[in-house]
Length: 122
Image (cartoon, rainbow, N blue to C red):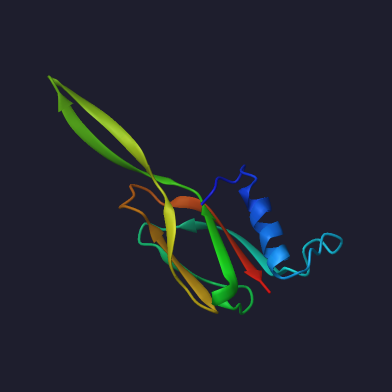
């Protein structure tokens, strides 16, 4: 997935528009995008399932998730313990017409604040 600052998201929009033989620039993408749902939430350590604001067609949907927790470990370096941490990202596992399940890429040390965007195309 390209980073949020990448122009590849715009490229994707125009490619989809071209494939559908409509641009829809004057309508703000209304001829390509059916709905966009944005959510912000705390993702618990065990993960969770989030219900969509409205029923979607999962086969025509793109999901983007932002946020991160961290994992911790410790190594013994000589006589001194050395603590370190690494980022652990939320990922989605199951997407259907009414909800999406979210979990972490690895076992996190803390819950995290996350954002979710669900874009449904025509």
